[in-house]
Structure formats: structure tokens, C-alpha cells
Length: 193
Ligand SMILES: CC(C)(COP(=O)(O)OP(=O)(O)OC[C@H]1O[C@@H](n2cnc3c(N)ncnc32)[C@H](O)[C@@H]1OP(=O)(O)O)[C@@H](O)C(=O)NCCC(=O)NCCS
Image (cartoon, rainbow, N blue to C red; front, side, top):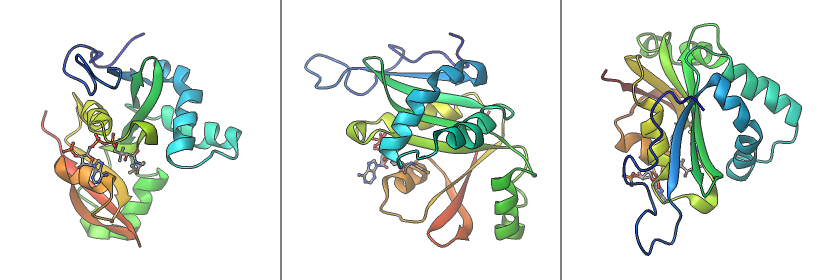
């Protein structure tokens, strides 16, 4: 299996490694679009436990999974524990003409203009509830941004400062750019190459 970045298994400490650990070691790997295809159903299973049940499987596959997987610079990062997928993240290059890019430009106006178009879009990040709080989300985040050629990244998330997702992004240098809808914020991060 070809990875965009080196499989981190054993390359750095991962949650649960070491004698007496209650958890199995977690294997973080980054996959280009073609290799990501094999993860479709397992990603959907983690999606269902983390976000919500996928009621229309065919719609999810075509409008979310395949459409995103076809985008420029797509990458999927996976976290596996004992061969079981416990978390994932994906992203791609965002361009005007895509739904979210256009939505952000329309709703944030001038504040978004320097950010949107050619940015890396950090689209999804999820860790199965049974595996949360072990550092896996942070590892997925860091692997997602590793080695990107982009100079900036964008994402949308909750504006709830107490939510794990908000605090994860803020602690990793993401800045709030604005709000495109009640309860949501757009965050941006300058990337150093
Ligand atoms: C957000 C999410 C991916 C974090 O995954 P995780 O494996 O639990 O996160 P980690 O254990 O790696 O913690 C990473 C950071 O998250 C924050 N965090 C984690 N759990 C938290 C909690 N219960 N309360 C507040 N902050 C928390 C901390 O800032 C932590 O920072 P640290 O790395 O300095 O310790 C996970 O909670 C999740 O899947 N949530 C539901 C889906 C979601 O909201 N996805 C994001 C959509 S934009």
C-alpha cells in the first residue's frame, strides 16, 4: 500500500504503547485517493458511530465519499488499533466553484477572500467515541497537515469553545476567521513548508 507519508507505526510514540498499557498501539497512515478507496465502508462505520447513522448509503458514497476522493490533493488519514479503524480524517485542495468554498466566500466576504482558493481544506476529523481522549484526534490532525505544499488551510467547526474539536484546533494554531452560520465558525491556519 502506497502512503503519502511514512506509516508512523513505531516511528514515534503513539497512545497506548508500552508495557502495561490498557490500549493497543495505534497505527496512523496517510493514503492518496486510490488507496483510500479500500477504507470506504470502515470509514462509513466510524462516521455512523461518531456523527450519525448514514441512512442513505448510496447517497453518502456518491455525494460525500467519491466526490471528495476525486478532488485535487485528496488525502485520507486513518487510525487503526489492532487492525480496527478507530478514526479518520480527510481533506483536499479547496477551489471556488466547490460548495463550501463558495459558501464561505459568500458569507464571510472580505475576511475570507485572502484565504479561499488553493487552500488545503481540512474536511473531516472523527474518532470513534470508544477511542476518544487518547490523543488519536491530535495524531490524525498532525498527520493530515504533514508535508502539505499549501501555504494555508481552512476548516469549518463549532463555535462552542468548550467542545473538544474547538479546543483541538485552537491548541494547534488555528485562528477564527469568521462565522458563516449560527453555531459555526471558519478557522484558518498558516502552514509553514
Ligand atoms: C474532536 C475529536 C476528533 C478529538 O479526538 P480525540 O482523539 O478525543 O482527541 P485527542 O485525545 O487527540 O485530544 C486532542 C485535543 O482535543 C481536545 N480535547 C479532547 N477531548 C476533550 C474534552 N473532553 N474536552 C475538551 N477538549 C478536549 C484537547 O484540546 C486535546 O488537546 P491536547 O492534544 O493538547 O491534549 C473527537 O472528539 C471527535 O471525533 N468528536 C466528534 C466529531 C467531531 O466533532 N469532529 C470534528 C468535526 S469539525
